[in-house]
Length: 612
Image: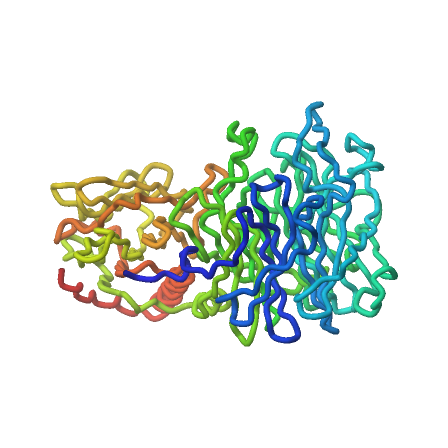
């Protein structure tokens, strides 16, 4: 069976107890990986939660015994982030319930017994590449803000906070850490939050930890808040520095969209909160209440981890009140970012997303990742709250993402049929099945992780009614079907005679349409790329992609398909195309159409399908 590097189960396990969170890695000066992880014998937030460090000298294949940064029977220690200085010292910053608070007031007058997101923000350090840590912890001074004063304790005796964002060493020698302040505990645990940044001008040069100076930014008493209409939650800020010294941050809300901001003065002031968009003024990303991180990689480019759907929010799904907003973190998606110039300074634009990781269990929650770059290779860590893993990112995936904006060529690998004008009857190829019966081994069936793709154009007049574009179903209900539906949508169906799945696309814009339907048997999802953009459900629905049954065997049906003359330029692939490849196909079609318009070139002849 196919091994899919995107499958989370193929990753290398980072050993923890039961609960495991934020497996963040720095590369020590001796070449080892030093991983900080929050772990415990119970569940998230239960007593006994502690920060440990682990070392690996073989890229995460094996790990040395964990080292406790705090006693296992001491106050809760949680949510560590790591920073390695140019001198080799490694700092670990984390929450510490130093005062042993046992319960906190909610805004409705009740109490929570979870006490891992309050107290003191502290650090320890290691001067031996993570083998041991300073016996003493040191407090980070954090300035009080308006949101702190509004908590039930007035911000004086108790404050609520935590951090998941990677610390940065800036080009001017300053160090800066994101920090989420909480003003109210209630529905969703953190009911009100906003982001600030802790900056030190002397951390890199001052060996005495007691003399390290901290400044809380932005100026004033208000941190980075949600954009209008996005609720009261703005938290888990992730931060990068751009090539002109500007800072860019992205963070989560409960409105179904991530937010972002730019600072041109080192974090003292920020642009008004806005939705994170693929390009300035363009369509927004969609994101549930989950970590979404941006990382800078070599070559001055960027990667962005997110979950590519809107999440249930109060205005659209009452289930959010029961904690549904934290679900649906599977799959994890990745985009590539690049800088463009503007009168205000550098801005970021983003590629269409690709699936980076998935789990076979839909309820798995892949989150709190970190990125490791070494010798031209990239790894990502992630946690599902009970198991943490490290995964190497396939180099070809990164190359496609980084070059997606330049792609204008038709994918050839896996192409089993190309028909420029396939009207009438069309001999269909046989696609690889999703599952196969095995004659040996304990499991009688196995997933092939196979998939297929349909790439085509649709004439505008096909959207005037319900037009069957391609019908390859047989009398038993096995095969596939594409047709247009009201509202300028495409409907795609497939079945194996035992069960059937149907997905309706987002609306297509006016005019002829280019579309790629990707059926990916790894994560078992159906994707629709429309005119070079991956559909995401828009404002109408939470998801723009669909899951299909893990027990669907195949989508092969009639040997001869009935095809409408309004379907053109059909390409069938016996594999799931990458989204970037679909983007390249659409761009190549645009180049071809422009050449036809200029020169009157004849359309390409149809090729023969692969034998069934």
